[in-house]
Image 1 (cartoon, rainbow, N blue to C red):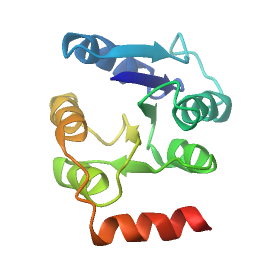
Image 2: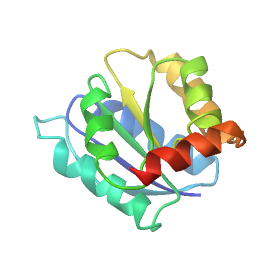
Image 3: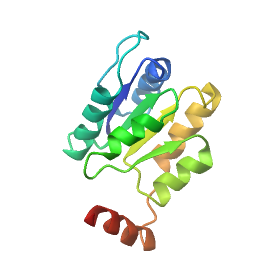
Length: 143
């Protein structure tokens, strides 16, 4: 897969950890910034990640910040994006299986580094269940 990734200063360290982890799994990574831990505003970065996924230039996206909440809000403003905030393997699995999450929002301040890898693996490996969940996604997309 081709995966877009972006972080603000509060998610920068985990972004830099995830890039080689994704590459090791054979994924192509497109980095939308930020490129340092210096304070930066997150909306333009998250919007760029979401747009790349919505335009199908990337298969999925990962957005990172302090909590993941603001990042998910920005991404979800882009039509066709289903950004889910994940804080555990179970929340990640639900986001993929039930919501067909195409953008993963992570909060570096709320996830341990050890859990980060398990969350990533779960998000990449969990298939969408379809069925009643597909009907609900269609309702969301219909506006």
